[in-house]
Length: 296
Ligand code: OGA
Ligand code: MN
Image (cartoon, rainbow, N blue to C red; front, side):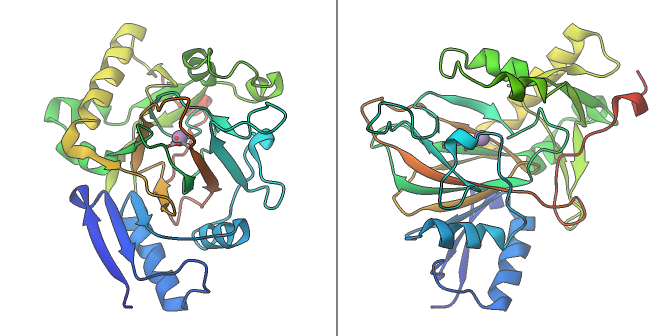
């Protein structure tokens, strides 16, 4: 079957049909997929059946895979793969992370100096109710900003703090190791960045971690960040994914924010997650600015 691409949500996402990701892919197809990953914030592959090695090898075609700090969620077969699940093992301990609650609009690792470029989720078990995942198109959101907001973000940098996210989900995940907290001082990222291949500009936001804008009074900075997030997550910028077992999605953190609906604790949801880390010459990746170089 020939490779087919179906654009979803105005091109924010693209569903790619005709590939069996457990088989070795032709070099030309790999090149085409990398191109699609630069042009779309989310790639969707349905009806896949993958071992952890096959899944990790596929994600690795897009860039080096990263082992995240959550070693407690990691697979023992391929430690680059982590479990995102509400399931518990026979010992009653969580098998993975992120439980069954709502995950608010965010961009992964925005509190880090070098956030991951993107991630993959492969659906093994899905919730029959809830558990949908939504992505917002930060390229279209930037392009659609009213002039007043476009001017307001020009050259501005926001400050991101891990502790803000921890406080938000305190009830859900009490035991983040202290070493993780200590490793994450506040960081600064530009509010607007440019894709090195497509040349398109995108907003970079994360309401779960951003605490202000450099050079702006606290309240004014927070107001601007709230206004930007409200604008960027308008329905016209959002792709909603209704999960089916076997779905394999890849997204880009520089191009999108994402959010997950909660689901009932009685449902079973199991996703395998991979984290991709590319250099800024190849993809839109959030980059930090050293605080010393930022004019206050
Ligand atoms: C993540 C995430 C969403 C989901 O893994 O970073 O936000 O649908 N997951 O589980
Ligand atoms: Mn996430």
